Image (cartoon, rainbow, N blue to C red; front, top):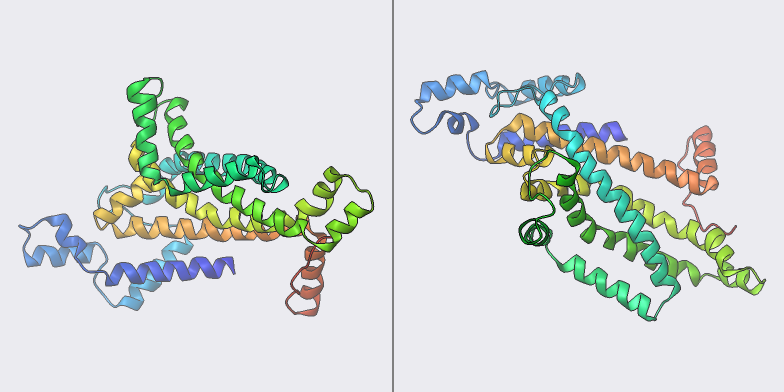
Length: 315
């Protein structure tokens, strides 16, 4: 299914790029280009010919991981992405790790102190940071730490200090999703009968939380984290633009503005592949947390049918 998702994404983005208004050849040549020059440029760019033939050739190139050459930069797309993607991945993975490391403990604290000042404080902070636009928050960080205090660089790359503000800006608004999800999941699980039974048997609160509540509450959180990975990578576009970081997001934005279709198509396919891989990892994490899910998939594979929906973990 992951391969099917990537294939459909490739077909969809190629189709969209061929039906959007505008002529990239005319834009590259300028307003003074003649009709003959534009037609010759379109032929050189591979924009002439039947759609299905061009689509088949494009899919064959994708299979061979040959994304061609950027129309705007005139450089290899694969080499350009290989140079830029470590910067984007470093920021995105740092966002994800810190979001989870901050959001889950904060959500647990809010759930275990429901109705108290800890819970109200977490909910208020979550609403505050979720309401602040990311670009405004990034600009305020630049004003405070770069212009006013002068302790961190405002833009570009060069040392590890250049990545501090982009990561902080993403984390301040990113932990909210994990915290709210784990809080809601914990509150739902803590009301289940088996949790009440465990407490009635004299099981300590720590043991109830560790062995009964958290395994069930983590299921939706894993789904949330896996589903937001692609969003984090895509959201790095605004971060890279604000802090002038030459990553994949900036590469994509420049390509869109200049109708550099090969770059847009290549980055879109990479994002689709990243999302498909994350969903696969989410399924594997389900089996790791709940062995019954793994057993259901194994038995359903032998019998040739889909597994049943899993229930609660009671031990």
